[in-house]
Image 1 (cartoon, rainbow, N blue to C red):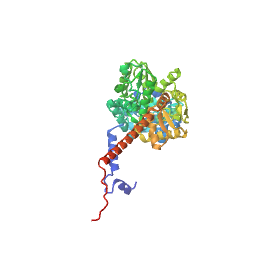
Image 2: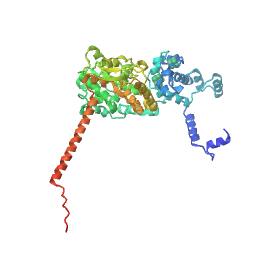
Image 3: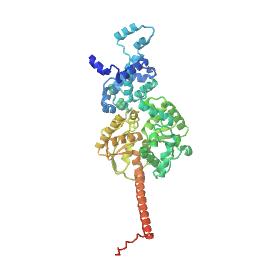
Length: 507
Ligand code: SF4
Ligand code: SF4
C-alpha cells in the first residue's frame, strides 16, 4: 500500500476510520480474551473414533441440502470434522501441552512453533467453526450416504454441547428459543396457560368433536403428546384438530396433559444446550407416573426425541409411537377402516425425524395406500434420501434465509410431480414447507396426513366444512341485516311520507 493509499484509508486528517477503530477494538478484545478451551475430554470414545474415521471422500458434499444453498466448502461434514480436529489438537495435543507450560521459555516456544509447525487457533477460526457447526439442520442425510458410517447427527449434537460449554454457542438468534423454553416451557414465547387455548377455540368453532380429555382424570392408556408447534401455531392447528377427531371417532382410550404439557426439549438438545436434561427428566417422571401403555405424538421431532433420546437419560415404562405408526397398527388389525374416498393426487415429504432418524417410512405410505381414491406420486428424493425442508436443528432460527431456500427447493420438487397437495407428518415440516410455498407463490396445498385420515373417516374435511359454514352464516347474517334495513326504511317512509311537490301557481 502506498503512503497515499494508507492516508486515504485512514482518513485524510490522519484520524482513524470507523473500520480501523473497530478493528483495533476487536484486536484488543482478542488480546484480552484468549480462545477458550473446548472441553474435548468430554467427548466419548465413539465420537473420537468417528472423528478419525472420516476418509475425506466428499460424498457428504454431494448430498448436504444446506451446502446446496450455501456452497461454502467449510460447512460440509468433511471440513467440519477436519476443523474440529485442528482445534482439538491445537488446544489438547502434545504440543499444546508444551506451549501452555509455564516452565518453558518463550524463545523455546517460538522454536518449537517453527520446527513442529504448531499453530494456535485464532478467534476468527473458532467463530467460523461455530457458525458452520450451527449452519446444519441435523437432517442426517450425510449419515445415510457416509461410506464410513459416521453417526454424524449425534456427532454434531455432541460437538455443539462442547461449544455451548465453552460459551461459544448457540448463535445469537437461537438464544431466544433457549430463553423462551426456560421461561415458558415452549419455544414460541407464549404463556403456559395458552397451550390449551386452541382446543377451547376449536370446540367453539365446531372443529373438534369434543375437547381432548385430560389423562389425569380419565386414566387413559394412550397419552397424546401434542408438542409446542401444534399447540401454539394457529397456522398448523389442523394437526391437533384432526388428531383429536381421529382418536374420538375410533373411540381410543386416550388422554392429554393439557396445561401440564411442556416442550419435549428437542430444540435444546439439537442446539447443544445442557438444559435439555432437566426438561427430559421432568417429562419422563411425569409420563412414567401416568400408568400409560403408549405415548403417541403427531410431531416427528417430539416423537424422535422422546423415543430415541429420552431413554438415554432415564428408562421409560411405556412404548413411544408416532401417531401414523399407531394408526398403521390399527389398520393392520382392522380397527381402522376408511369408509370415504379422498379424491386427491398427493406427494409425500418424509420428515427427517420420522424417516431417516427412526426408519418410519412405511407407516405413512401404508395409510395413504389404504385411503380410497388417494393417489400417491413419489418425488425422486424420497425415504432416506428425502430432501430436508430446513426447519429443524435450530437452522430456521439461526439461518432463516437458508431455510427459506431449502424449503423452496423441496416445493419445486413436489410441484414437478403434478400433485395437488404436499403431505407430511410433522407440524414443524408443515410450518417450514409452508414458508417455501409462500416464497414461491406455489399453488400446491400443504397438508398433514392426519387431515386425510380424518377426511376418510368422517367423509369431509372438518376445517374446510367449518370454514364454508362460517362463510354461509356470514352471508345469511349480511342478507338478514340488509333485509331489516330495507324494512325499517319502508316503515319510516310510511310514517313520514315525503312531501309531494305542489305544482307552481301563478300569483
Ligand atoms: S446433517 Fe444434513 S444439513 Fe447437517 S451436514 Fe449433514 S447433510 Fe448437511
Ligand atoms: S461422507 Fe463420511 S467419510 Fe466421506 S467425507 Fe463425508 S463424513 Fe467423511
